[in-house]
Length: 79
Image 1 (cartoon, rainbow, N blue to C red):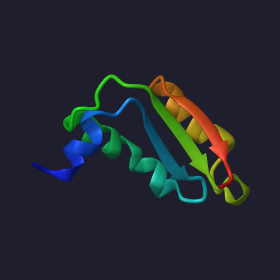
Image 2 (cartoon, rainbow, N blue to C red; image 1 turned 90 degrees about the horizontal axis):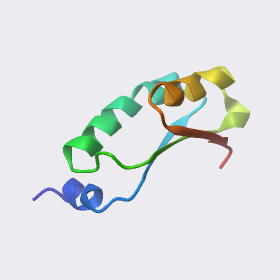
Image 3 (cartoon, rainbow, N blue to C red; image 1 turned 180 degrees about the vertical axis):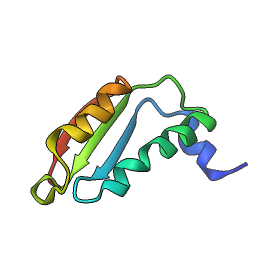
């Protein structure tokens, strides 16, 4: 059994974090969602977090719109 399955199967929520200064990190979120679904974490709440808002290189709406199109919650932080 793969370790990933152990992480996903009992999950109650997924938090996807991407770097607001790197568009590539936003583009990879769909891959992570597919993986979570493949390993048994389908139909659970998803929160999308844009990190490093003080260094953003994309508009404030890009992450929000990406999440909204998929019916996910969205916030931005600086951690």
